[in-house]
Length: 225
Image 1 (cartoon, rainbow, N blue to C red):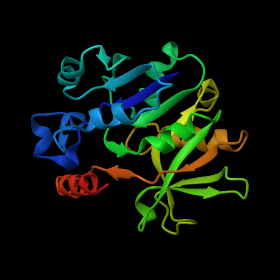
Image 2 (image 1 turned 60 degrees about the vertical axis):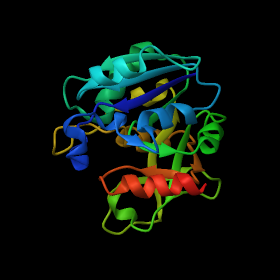
Image 3 (image 1 turned 45 degrees about the vertical axis):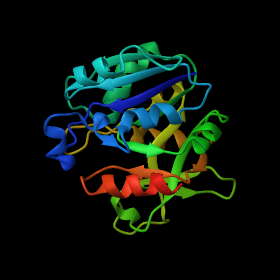
Image 4 (image 1 turned 135 degrees about the horizontal axis):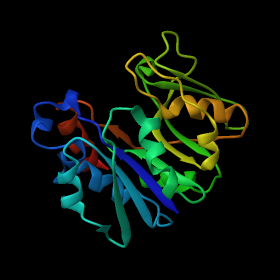
């Protein structure tokens, strides 16, 4: 099975740390964020596409073409076209279902493993301020019935972690162009979920790294688990 990791962003909120390094190479507990992500991948993942952009040559030179037994391949996103734009670049290389992840959050492996057992899945986590994220509504059968980006009145406290299991059906839906000119996979996922069951998996370890002050918090959390 393949995985796609989106790692092209500039990481502006992490400045000044990202003035010299791309966000996926920022160290947390002695190793890059991207290393944490690669090590959490389920065993079934044998090929990983990493979409790079800002200082992407540093990522590809650091990790080269293998991590453990997994083959790593790099695709450059030259323009800021959003997550949907990044995923579209990988489309010609994808076969069957795949795991999509962001390259700047640390996640626990158990939920990722569980997600790969389903044809379509979205990994979520509870949050005390869901209005800052994509908020997920879940049906009684544990599938997605609604996804709303940064709502003023959230309908639940479950938010998308940005990790999901998809297949070629996602490309049947055109994402909407946002005010910033980017296109998001979440738009495609919301449309997909209206026609096909997307299983909701709750992540017990989700550590978003957005600001410099998040790093010591993440290191303390990792030290205590």
